[in-house]
Amino acid sequence: MFLSKPELLEALRTQALQFDPPILASELEHRVRQVSIDLVLGGPFRIPLPPRPHIPAIVIEPSFLDDPSLWQQQEGEEITLKPGEFVLAKTLEKITMPNSLIGFVEG
Image (cartoon, rainbow, N blue to C red; front, side, top):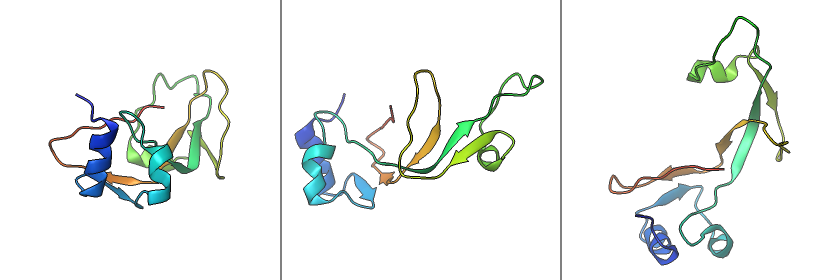
C-alpha cells in the first residue's frame, strides 16, 4: 500500500517521516506528489569507467565508491544523462521513517 498525498503530508507534519534537511513549507506543494516525495540529488556524481577486460562484474562496496580506477567523479549541481547511461549519486536528504513504513528510490 502506498501513502496518499494527504497521508504523506500528515506523516511529515507529525514527524513520523523526517527529512534532514527538512522540506521547507514553500516546497511541499511541488515536492509531495500523489504517492511519492521528490528527492534532491547531491554530488559528487560517479560515472563508471569502461570495465577492464579481466573484470567480469563490479560489486559495489563502500570502499569502491572512492576508487579512481573504477569511477569518474563529476562535481557540480547537475548532470545530463544520455539514454542507457548510468550514474551513482546521493540524495541531498537523509530520510528517517518508522519501521511500519518502507520506501524505495526510483529514478
